[in-house]
Length: 366
Image 1 (spheres, rainbow, N blue to C red):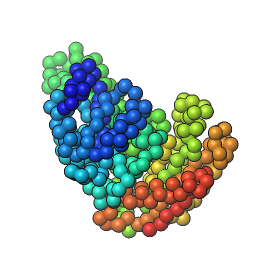
Image 2: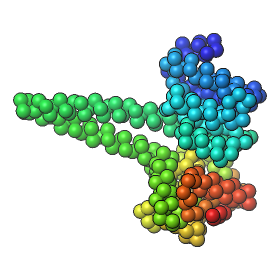
Image 3: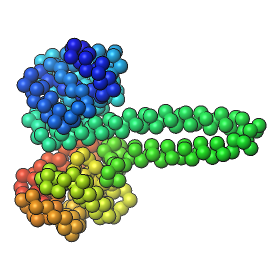
Image 4: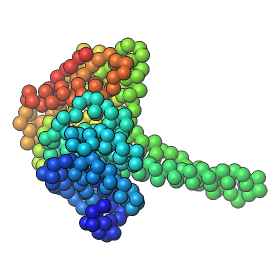
């Protein structure tokens, strides 16, 4: 561990740590500046010049009892490839989130990182500053939620132990312990409800969060792989949302996202359809047992409904009101393939929609 990190930990030993890994010093310096702007002083940002350096740093931090919240790693490095570095870091610290930051990673490398390191996301190089910021902030928010879930589980275990003790002694003390038992049950119910909400809902938009989306897509992908039926996915992004926040401030931006999420939810007709927050201002819609033509109709309904909201957007160059761009992908799942294939197809179509003027959608079918 470097001397400067030792000094930081003595002063701020409660602050989580973010590690950036790249074999190019200029990239590390640029990345550290970007993260400092996004995170301020709430996190300690450390750098490692390559895979071996990163693993040594990780070992030192764990030995000192530090909390490593997030690791961002390049893929192409001269000593150890990024997917292998993330795999070994995951073995040391399973709760640490991982992001692959590269312009050269292939699908196999990303799949390896997802399978062996529970990769949170990968970001292409050269990165877009706002996309990197949103991805890192969302990842750290997810990490903090995970830590809260761990605390909730500890509390639940303690409450269950208290209940078991009360039950064992209820024959002798039931009269005087009835009130305590009712209180403990109420606490247990409240803790379970909070745990369920943290595990499945986005706290701002009150729709499914990224964790629930990942689990649901995997479940539906496997089901339709067996049944040989279509599954479609829509990835939606609010047009010029950064400019919207700059003009109307972040509180108005939150209200805008909430209105759009509610509108999309109301336009989904079937219980199996799921809308979730994918990250930042991006929303994702899973449409099981829906062919591409059906997904296009859903996208049209959503676009029309967003237009009816008539949310003013003075900084948009495509419309005086808030609009969204969408990427649509549909396919019959293939055994042995990852659902990430469907997400990547939709993501490419979303970028086509943005490149072709926004306020529109593009479709890709396999």
